[in-house]
Image (cartoon, helix red, strand yellow):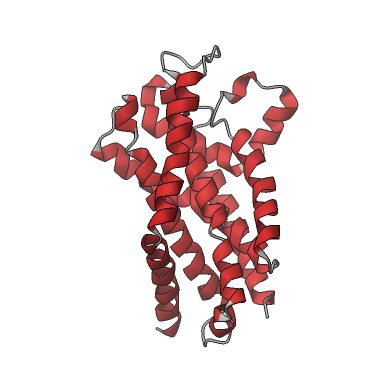
Length: 251
């Protein structure tokens, strides 16, 4: 019971902290909007994207970008907690490091999904046929995609004590993951070595799963949906184990 209460408290704290920061919500919403409206309408893409407009093609990718950037940024909460001494209070609490990590990770993942949901409803502007069934189908995909990404941010933050270093490392990881995920262009036309790199990218499978569900028969997915989810799930298990281990070493 103590473990469950501790987990719930940490989850609720992360969600409340996110919802109260309206400036961050608005600013995080504006970036994907600029990608979709300015970049999506300004680029004349000549690759094979079927009968889709370029905006429709990158729409699932921009949702993936939102999940990635929001999820990775959430690691900064660990540094703030260290700075103000709250992390010490958490670590000496009578709950396991696994519950501590899971509470923060799932709380931050919930925040990232909420941000992704806001971007999802931009699909109305782009002419993507959005419905309730599609919305309910992508929610678990978005949540599953964020688990491993949030775990990366939390793991990195567990070893860092200043915000500047975290920002540099976050950008160093975010940009390759984003550009090699197929969010902005089909991966089939890339050189072989870049295709290999994209296969090692967990976000590739998240974007592919989102594109499969959102665009349906209008887009031929790279991998079967079950394979996307299986690979993301395996990646999450590994990163959760690494993150729990990292939190276990914090003092």
